[in-house]
Amino acid sequence: MPKKLDLTENLEQYIIDHSEVLTDVQKEIIQHNISLGDQQRLQISVSQAQFLQTLIKISNVKKILEIGSFTGFSALSMALALPPNGLLISLDKSSKFSKKAQSFYEKANEQKIKQIIKPAIESLKELKDLNQKYDLIFIDADKENYLNYYEICIELINKNGLIVIDNVLWHGEVADVKKNDKFTNIIREFNKHIKEDSRIVKNIIPIGDGLTVCIKK
Ligand SMILES: C[S@@+](CC[C@H](N)C(=O)[O-])C[C@H]1O[C@@H](n2cnc3c(N)ncnc32)[C@H](O)[C@@H]1O
Image 1: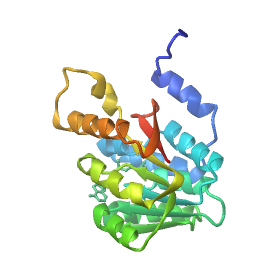
Image 2 (image 1 turned 30 degrees about the vertical axis):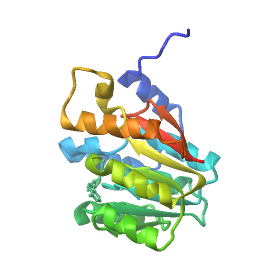
Image 3 (image 1 turned 180 degrees about the vertical axis):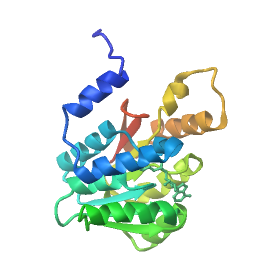
Image 4 (image 1 turned 45 degrees about the vertical axis):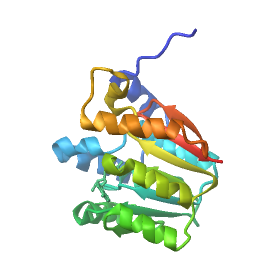
C-alpha cells in the first residue's frame, strides 16, 4: 500500500502555490476574512476553491446553486470557472455578509452571481416550486439543516449533476469515537445518510474540512 500523505499546512500551501493562481479580488476577500478574526474559519480553503473550479470546468457546469455564501469567496471562485452564459444563485440569510460579498462581485466585475437573502430553506422551497434545476449545488451553511438541504437539493439537481457538501470530516472528529458532541454527531448522521443513498454516487475528498462530491444518477 502506498505511503499516505500527511496534509500539513506547508504541503497545503505548496498545493495552493502550484495550482490555479488566485485573482486580486479572491485575494482581497481572503484578506478581508482574515481581518474578521475567528469568522475567517467560515470560508472554504483555497485548495477547495481550486478543486471546485476544476469540477465546474470538467463537468461543463453552467448553473450553480450555493447554500451559504458568507463574504463571497466560494461564490466568486466558482463563478470565475463558469462560462460567460453561466449563472450562480447564492443563498444566505445574512444581509451583512451578502452586502459585503456583493461589493466583491462588483469589484471583480462578476455579473453571473445573483443573491437571495433569506433563510435558505425558504429559498430552496421556492426554487423547487419554480421547477429550477442546477448542474452543481454547493452546500456550506448551518449544519443542523444539512439533511433538509440535501433532500431538497436532490430534487433541484440535474441528472449527472453534482451536489458538493463541505465540512464532512469535521476537523477529523467524525472518525474519533471519543467525540460525541452535537455537531460531530450531526455530520456523522449526514454522512451515513449519504452513504446509504442509492440515488447518487459519492466520494469524500480530504481537502479543507472534507468535501463530499455526489453525482446524481
Ligand atoms: C460556512 S459559511 C459559508 C462560507 C462560504 N461558502 C465561503 O467559502 O466563503 C456559512 C454561511 O451560511 C449562512 N447561513 C447560516 N444559516 C443559514 C440559513 N439558515 N439560511 C441561509 N444562510 C445561512 C451564514 O450566514 C454564513 O454566511
